[in-house]
Amino acid sequence: MVHWSAEEKQLITNIWSKVNVADCGAEALARLLIVYPWTQRFFSSFGNLSSPTAINGNPLVRAHGKKVLTSFGDAVKNLDNIKKCFAQLSKLHCDKLHVDPENFRLLGDILIIVLASHFGKDFTPACQSAWEKMVRVVAHALAHEYH
Amino acid sequence: TLTQAEKAAVVTIWAKVATQADAIGAESLERLFCSYPATKTYFPHFDLSQGSAQLRGHGSKVMNAIGEAVKHIGDIRGALAKLSELHAYILRVDPVNFKLLSHCILCSVAAHYPTDFTPEVHAAWDKFLSSVSSVLTEKYR
Image 1: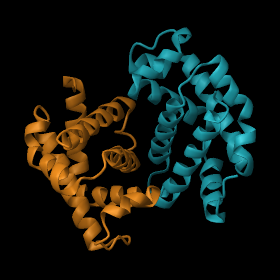
Image 2 (image 1 turned 90 degrees about the vertical axis):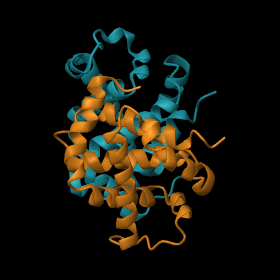
Image 3 (image 1 turned 180 degrees about the vertical axis):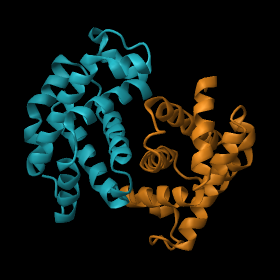
């Protein structure tokens, strides 16, 4: 079980309460596909991903980004039990989606940068540190059931 | 290798970052040491407290080097040849750390210039810093 200090919990939930999940999720996923174009390999059914403009305007990317970040929100609500919370999702990503867990780390990095751009000064080094831990724990939980 | 558009994106944002290079450099290091405490092992001789003169001085050094790379974006290897040797033979910072610092620099730039830091600019900078990191570690062995 991961130990979260009171300060870490506060920094995480405080930021999360101000996040627009739909917008932030869409932006994070779009940036993932733009900055690391090889990640597009998982989304051949999404239609036009041929340019940053196409990716940003793609409704499937938007919808999926929202879905992904909504799941992330479950982790925020279950900080003391993230592994259990994501056990099924982990199996799904391994058995059905065949996603290399490295991609979870890439998305985590992108999410941090998106949060930095949204919160500016408020995304202090201490805040970033708590969130780096958060994305690390989530990525680990999502990879945990891989075999 | 960076496309013309990517080079242009890097150069444009750099013009803005350069006006606050020292502050952004110090902030990036602060973010690095805070999120990745193991990176502090390379600075046992430093006062790493927030706002320390050494932190600011070193942040400045790092950003100046990046500025040189931007100025010679067509030949980063040439521009950073001496620094590459320094890192390979003297400093020997483990290669994994360049990714971590690059990430923190991106965070600082995103935090300071959110409207300029579009996905395309983000991609160009990620690629550029990756190039810089490659050059700095290419003589390691």
